[in-house]
Image (cartoon, rainbow, N blue to C red; front, top):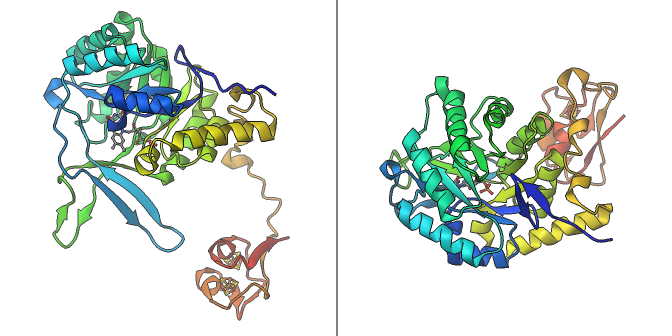
Length: 378
Ligand SMILES: Cc1cc2nc3c(=O)[nH]c(=O)nc-3n(C[C@H](O)[C@H](O)[C@H](O)COP(=O)(O)O)c2cc1C
Ligand code: SF4
Ligand code: SF4
């Protein structure tokens, strides 16, 4: 069977749905070309910041934060990496990229004034950008609006740009919204050609010995594999509400994660941290994994399974509780008597490695048992 991984995203045609998200990895034509050679579907160039917010990046600017306890460990890439490139330098790089690359090159813009959005937007279009992603969500920059005018402000910017520009306009959202679907629908009505769910979170890490914020001392961006569940939740909730395509972003660490985004309804999937951690060669592995999945499932194109899980997502009121008589059962052959299950059971239903009738089938003991000695049975 012939496999087709092409996607139409915001009026652009991509040979595959994997996009290099905006970061220093996409800042120069040389880096963009390396990404193209590694079979990336499109590139979002590192964000251009309006002159008054552009900043040199401090050194060092990366920290990997590991937190949590056994079984609940999580890692974050914590970083502060703004760009100080001028409009002229950035536009020059876009023009050069368009001459040297075949894949779509999408500019990324973060401004704070209406004039900035407008004039920089026009200049990037003139420089040859295939589209502009509006970075409404920079976790390290100044916030572009206060909470009470948030949607109005974003809508105004999209409308303004859509009135003046011919190229597609894509809105990149912060994960720190109460209802991203609602915000996205408003941006779609304003003319946005696609939405990106999401940028990274804005956070703070503290060195308690020094009693100071770490790295440069500012609030930083952070994200990691754990972010994907948040993004999947909102991509899936938005899939049937929005008419424009969604780019899933956040937490991709394998081909399986790309497949999950498409099953949740994403048209394209962006990645950044994974390339920072594993290098560009990972992109080929991701494409291979995606194609393998399609072959195994008998899919010929991405539309065959895009959004497939959405109809299976159940409203809380409709959750089936007919299996409420489930209970834990310990397999003595696998149990090494570590005692963890006894400690975690809130009902004290496990005594001497036997499950009593106090068990209410919550399933926690089965999850914490390292030996997989507990199964849930009817
Ligand atoms: C070091 C670094 C720099 C980033 N710079 C930008 C940026 O300039 N503009 C932007 O829109 N997003 C930026 N991002 C966010 C990524 O584009 C992406 O949305 C985010 O990291 C989530 O994807 P991931 O989990 O695959 O990293 C940056 C992320 C990292 C890790
Ligand atoms: S957690 Fe697993 S291995 Fe440990 S006592 Fe319980 S059943 Fe046995
Ligand atoms: S399933 Fe829940 S209630 Fe039952 S024994 Fe395990 S932890 Fe206790």
